[in-house]
Image 1 (cartoon, rainbow, N blue to C red):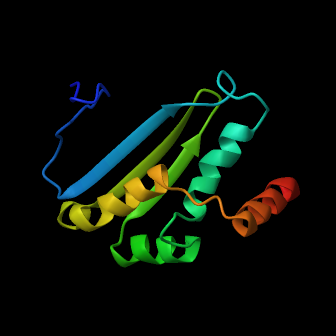
Image 2 (image 1 turned 45 degrees about the vertical axis):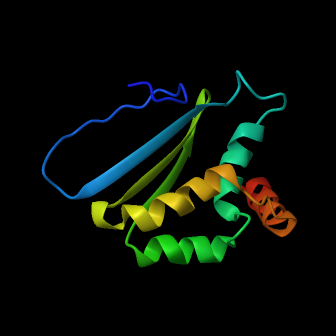
Length: 120
């Protein structure tokens, strides 16, 4: 379905479990990047903090609610998936949105990611 903002939104109802999966996909990767691996690096950097929370605070927050935040990327897209219980959606969705809309890209966190990437 198209919402008022023009973005496609699909809802699939399966099963009777009280589990919610929110999957956000962006066109990214080689067709869109000016330099190799920028898309992958940016995708992973989004988890490392927002304007309001550090990476440790974000990890504790999602763990507290027993939710899972999965970041995936490949040659053509980047994806962010949140699994949680429906009853915690009101608490989790604002923080999930915060990661995507207000990433901090803190220099210390970026330097750590660079080091890990080089070691890999």
